[in-house]
Image (cartoon, rainbow, N blue to C red):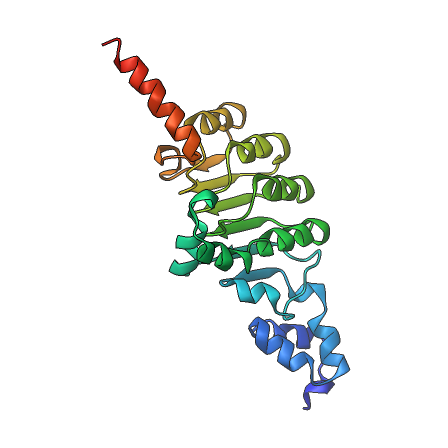
Length: 228
């Protein structure tokens, strides 16, 4: 039997065994396979492991998306993105400029097109902001699991957002996010005790502070020590 003789459900099943690039390559062979590629039912799970993958025209966002992960595990990306902005060299800022708004823009599309998302994992995404995640919580009301790892710009505002907008959340991980505080975690545990909350190392890491803030803190400590 020729591939074109298979019905749409069979073709969807065959496509489901292929990775994103292979699906796109096959879809370019004829109009019928292109229609199968664009069927939202094929795209219930998406995983991205490098910034370049988000730029490829090899996936479809739609109402069928349930599970999404965007994980940068490149040591180069992690090291550069984790540095405070005011400490980055011009070379490091140039590296960041090539992908700084990439995940934020992608998440904005998810907010508009994927209301049935159940699980989101963001790892090593050093440029996402509190507003990126809060907007997603407001748009994807069915979200049950949220995992943030090594996302250095997120703060307690995300925890406020999940209390206010994450009605369906069952599990939240904010691991190695250095600007999360014990007070923010305590708020979640008090107001949403049903959420399984993990914050490995986050509340014990040193939060970001600008150089002038560090100088002011040191002077304050010096004055206090004068009284002892």
